[in-house]
Length: 229
Image (tube, rainbow, N blue to C red; front, side, top):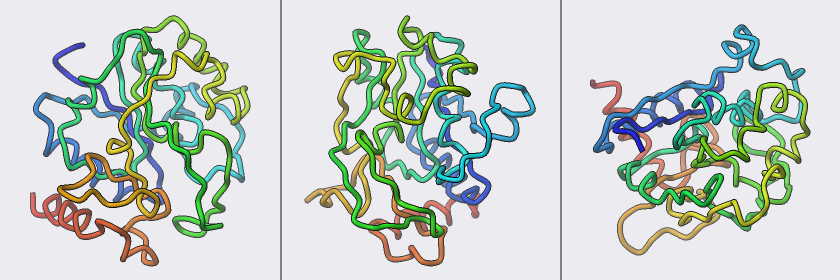
């Protein structure tokens, strides 16, 4: 583990505000320096790292670029990938402290079936095994098994192969507490305090139709802090 923690965040042109607020919340609570990198599809295309054809079923521009995280981390150490629609209320260093060197990656292993048929700004809400597992992943980028995740593989393998972590045996996938990927509208609110990372997976307050979601007030407060800075 280095003194600086590496965090790669999915970036979508429709959710730039969500990205900015996510970054603000990460930095505000962090006890150590963070190296934060937005995974912008257009930039990755220009670099020749991402060449997949546009996928009409993808609900975000980072549906597949997320799997470049170990490669972008030079297959060294630990690195976090997270969707942009997260709000952090705790120090992400606490999450990195849970890293288990025997695992190739760690995530919250949700048993999640969404009730809605659409999400965010009208995108189709798909259902598949291990849904939302890949929305927040702590990668052991140096693990030999993750070296398969080259740009060639990320650009050619199926969504099922990638989102279900099918390059790994099950015992190499570590489990994290769901407070680090608390699915708004699915998990109950904690009796005290807040989840450590709130995931507005159905849609967040940056969309006009999602102003009344759980913890929308926390997101709006973080947005106000960012604007005032």
